Length: 374
Image (cartoon, rainbow, N blue to C red):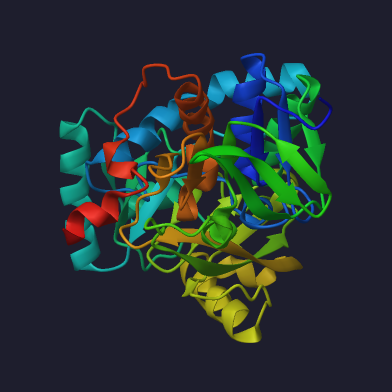
């Protein structure tokens, strides 16, 4: 049947692309549906940081998942380049989490101790050493937590790399095709109804980011998710201002190819409005100037906003819906969607094939919030 597939993936972002790619590698006939353009939401707006240790300070399930996913990027970068010619621009020049106050310094040193005990590399670097490596940084910093393994990629390239690799392996991709309903047969998923017709499959994977909750059918299970708007801007200089990524409490600066410097991101919860406001940009500008004073001489390039999916407990949802067999959910990655995309695709593919998992997903269960209220 022309409209029947082994798997249907809903969402054309980085995690939808990763899931489709991993399923296609297993020989599945896959359909990927996107209601707008591919990579038009959070994935296309992301800075591409692989901040497994800078973003996730405490040892726990998400920390371990992020470290595993981070380790997958070198092999994945080669796979995508070989299949599609797309360079995801993987950069491993470390990340500096800078401290401006004694309180921040003490906290970062505590985190370094925890992470080194967990077997990860992290070290405290003095202000003099940080500025020797990154002379453009402000003299007001006290020092930095240096994380050698945290790197970055070009988020749009990463997303399109997954999608193009999936297409090379036979995935059918349909843009501007909005899902309006799930189809069921005796409590099992049977397909989806869309603006472009109905499609059959007994395996449907929802990777709709901040829009995932609105697509789920009515049941006793509801995802505790909400959208978070983030505004970013970029500037260009003839000589790069930075070599490594700078991460601070108020903003981050990510150096890209061609002298581009990406500055992000504001955090505005509970809105789907992607308007770039003067207030958001002026806030980021002031924070960026505090970190790198010479940014005032850079040439303005552009500004944009993305909507990221956050959950009430800060953990993504990864797994099969407990009320509907064959319906899988991968959402709630917040600021770690790019970082977690490799492991997300692999885990969902293993779940679909009922294979043993390389990670414990109990902390990411779809119905985990119900257990806390019983």
